[in-house]
Length: 252
Length: 74
Ligand SMILES: Cc1ncc(C[n+]2csc(CCOP(=O)(O)OP(=O)(O)O)c2C)c(N)n1
Ligand code: SF4
Ligand code: SF4
Ligand code: SF4
Ligand SMILES: [Mg+2]
Image (cartoon, rainbow over all chains, first blue to last red; front, top):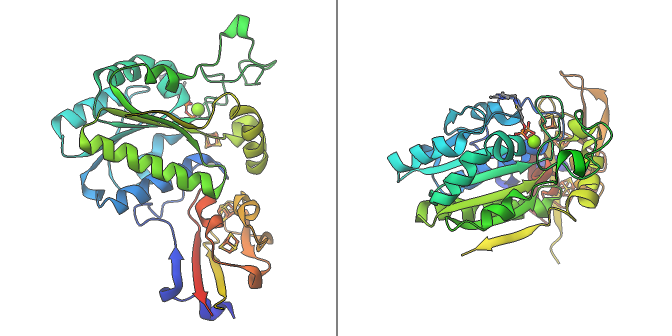
């Protein structure tokens, strides 16, 4: 019976043609892949495949250039907003975005991030906040929650010793150069669709020259958190969302 | 009234058996296989194909873009 449903004329959804056939190296269930897919869909729908430049991070998404079929530059750790600044100034007609983790954006690259946003560079920043350094074995990052265990705070983040978890998106909202800041997630199909809409808006802002847009995605690093992918989503809902509240932070 | 029927196709050797599609499906269509793919992962398949409504929730959730969704009105 399925045989007559499975036919080209009945196809309603498949991965974007801009997602390459290379198998992604991410752990099973990693949210990076889901966000890559949504970015690819938006670029495809905007017809911008040949006019997009991506500044890639250091972190688990270091191989992004192997997965999304657009022009990319692999940046030194945290420097993507500076590279994207140059790309957009030299090529104002291109869609320019960075893709960065919490370690890349809010630790080593905090300076580049703050100043690109303060200058109001016409770029979009896709920020994957999984509260951990996924790539290097799960160390504490600026956004690690209070009490959350990582390899460098095995007894949980201690506010006295390690400082407070940083809501960097809220900090960036204070800067005049930012136009749109939103916090989304990809833990349900509905959330994935909302994230896609937010990415579309950020990319359109970049093309309209409205300033810097940031789409933070509160994400699970199930391997670093030592949970199954589904458990990590439940843990994220219970523990991450009350602190990193979803929704628009700034829109003008 | 027209009835919507769906079906999915999983790219078996791309699948990593993360099970997110299984939890995302509102109709409990999907499950992980007993056998494994080329990489040694159990993979998603339609355990109860007759229940699929072609909503694409599974495909939206799949991090690796393994799922194609088909839909017809009968
Ligand atoms: C200059 C420099 N310092 C340190 C590192 C080691 N390093 C690689 S990835 C990483 C952190 C990545 O964390 P995050 O940005 O949160 O990305 P995730 O892997 O969690 O997606 C660090 C510290 C490096 N590659 N280069
Ligand atoms: S370590 Fe974490 S962020 Fe990196 S691929 Fe695995 S699940 Fe994803
Ligand atoms: S299309 Fe919808 S009903 Fe069919 S398997 Fe996927 S999630 Fe389940
Ligand atoms: S979500 Fe994708 S990778 Fe995960 S089990 Fe389902 S088909 Fe396989
Ligand atoms: Mg991280």
